[in-house]
Length: 319
Image 1 (cartoon, rainbow, N blue to C red):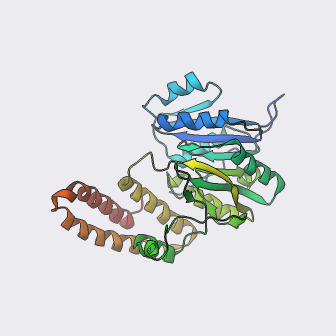
Image 2: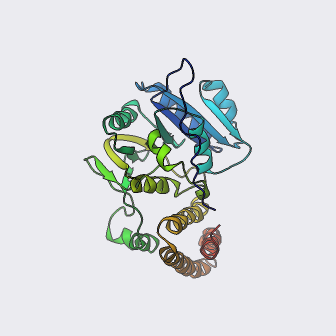
Image 3: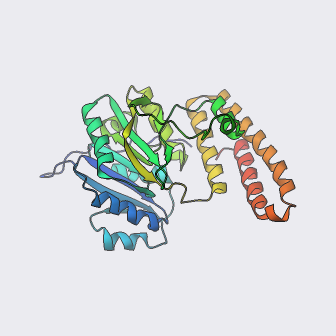
């Protein structure tokens, strides 16, 4: 199920053309309202580094393609017939570009030139760095996420039981710092990756579909000796969670975590994580069975019941 795609990464320069500094890869699925301002922020904020942009559309029906043709004819479009997943679509974009660096960028972001220049300049100056990213900010400018160590069973226990949030404000929001840090992984909402590093470790694992693929890639980078850096002087706005509601997202997030454990941590750790998610989902299911009979909670209870049943089925049969 989990196939890493090595892909065709060593792209030679086309005759008479120079390779750009940064190839920016965005995946779109019915998100035109965010894609438009995201692209506008890219082109309007004076990026000094040379770049090209490729949008991989996963079968949008909201007019995204027409908007791109009318407003951003310089953007290359790869059109998929349906939603092939974030990992596979991102790989399509990476393979169709040849920039020295690849910027994986969510379409629900607003970027700025200095933030992206900081990433390019850092990778230029640090050949040991396989990837770099900065802070993600909420639309109001508050901190959203930064760097994170790789998942542990204790961390997952604190998250799923919500004990972490009771003990530490904002938990599990990932780390912030005023210093440059080598770290485990960061969100691919805005992640600059060295193409030479991708040549070594391969592309995103398409088995994840969505969630978990970026942690898996950076796990492989770290394992291969490349460093992943958090840069506090680089920050962008990330709206977040605009493609699906939180009940559908829960199953996909848990699926990504289970796949990561199964692939990278081994059978026993993956089994314990399955048991943790199953038991907690069962407990939540029992609570929401009561909520179902409370008129003011009935609609939410239906969604919670379905969501937790989906997670329990996932824990029994990961697919």
